[in-house]
Length: 177
Image (cartoon, rainbow, N blue to C red; front, side, top):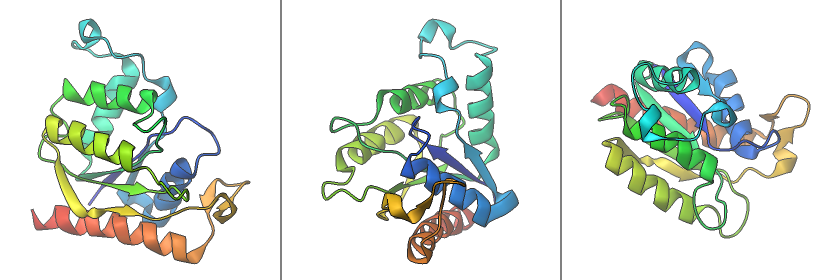
């Protein structure tokens, strides 16, 4: 069971990227992390042809090869960050995510969380035909103090347990279908 882990942040010290790195370490060979968000070209329908740009092809292949996809994205100005929306725009033209089980982790430790971003994410994912697994769409606050600055991974055992549970919930649902 392979799980694509996609960070919706381009910031090097992002707690969202820390979630992806941590899960990649926990899940080992079952994890397919994607940290290439900053490398994706701006979406242009004129360029969404065969072959697609190399980074788009890499991202689409990662999603296509996974049994499920887990997103972790921050909120920016009440919505999805533009760079992450760009990634999602590139998935609309492909069929890799259609009927694929998806979930997300809200890693924000802010009181308002990332509700706007996740509302927008749900809208786009439904549009692409992805199958949202509600039980795998969770809020697991990740304070910056829980991230080891040297490795960029989460060290707090309770936070690690929370993100691992979300990933396992998603893969369990993917196995059932």
